[in-house]
Length: 299
Picture 1 (cartoon, rainbow, N blue to C red):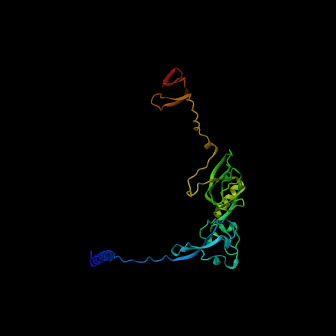
Picture 2: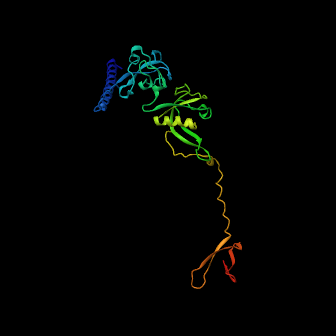
Picture 3: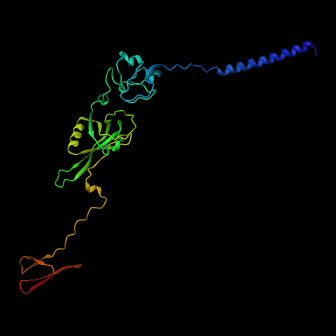
């Protein structure tokens, strides 16, 4: 084969390949026509202070247990701080009031104000009061009542009536436990027998608890977690403890006397009370001699 023919064949092949590539590029471009490509806007973020380690009631905040992270501006939680320097401004002491887990935002209502101490008064809700009642290992649900739990308060005393019978009734329902003895950490999981439980109640309920603890005894009933509904209750007395039916009323004895009416002439009948001779199933029979020789029988 001559050299000219070989060169022509090679050139034709190269041109064919180039034509195919150009055609493919053109088809791809035509496919994309009419589909605008829009750049996704970058979500706006801001810095926020979160916990760098588990924080519990009474712990002091510092640079060692805090860190700053990027957080979506549209989902910033209320009460969050933008920087550690802002949170610890003036180097004043800030103490944890409620448990905070790692990565959880540090919210203002979960910590004390600048320089404020971590007292129980800092965690009482607005309009409520804290009152402490004495309990025993039994009345305190064997120590399983912990800060943050919800309980019902039971009241037991003797009825002031003549029989002096004791009764128990539900005094308060769905009451939040603030502290047990000196423990106020709402993430504590270790039960312990305690002597006192501090409850968060309304002002009038503090008066009820103070009086009830003086004239009777108080005990606690632990509620299931997340249960806040109140239920209808009733006073329980010793009669309600027995599962036996109530005794039947005593059967009255059959009467031993009856009334007999006697009419003489056109006058009104005269009633006489006479004894019954028998009490047979068919009915009592009364036999009585009336007015001398007159004898009447009435069934």
